[in-house]
Length: 118
Length: 108
Image (tube, rainbow over all chains, first blue to last red):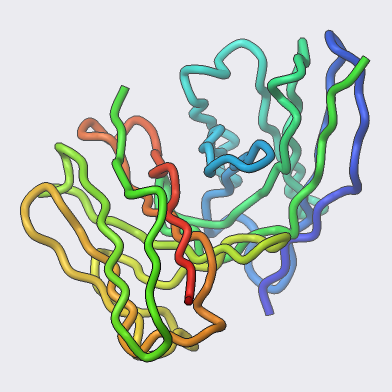
């Protein structure tokens, strides 16, 4: 079955960077887009961006442009999301999700809690 | 930026019908997707392309659309349906994805 296994929780200081991974299995990695979605405590879902695992092309939410970088390693079927210049407002659970180019997220990772605190 | 609007909360008694709306200017030309999220868990897709159910989703979940508003209906609500429900679509120019703020469904 399709599985998206994410890396463990992170605690970072303001101004630092964090890199979260998401290892896909159970399907052909290059056949579906992969997205990152985050959820701050008690808040709704926020789409961060998408990567085409086949070409490596990306599309980021305007709000995060310049701070977020999504990459993939096709040899290990792993997706990465790096967020820089962290601030307290970036404290959230970060999810990877498989889907179409912008919608239809049919499988999600278990989530990774990133805490930004001095 | 484009926004989808959902009511913050809906309360319903067991066995009754819950209706959750999602409105947006682009919805007459864009599909909506609905996700159920229980506390501490990842979201689960329950409706796609306005009114289609993925495998394994109970028949009591259905979707409909009318103009700029789409509705997720849960018929014969059960205690296990208590959760947050998020709608999702794309902006008019297909440049980014957007979620509504989510609706908390409480089963009384």
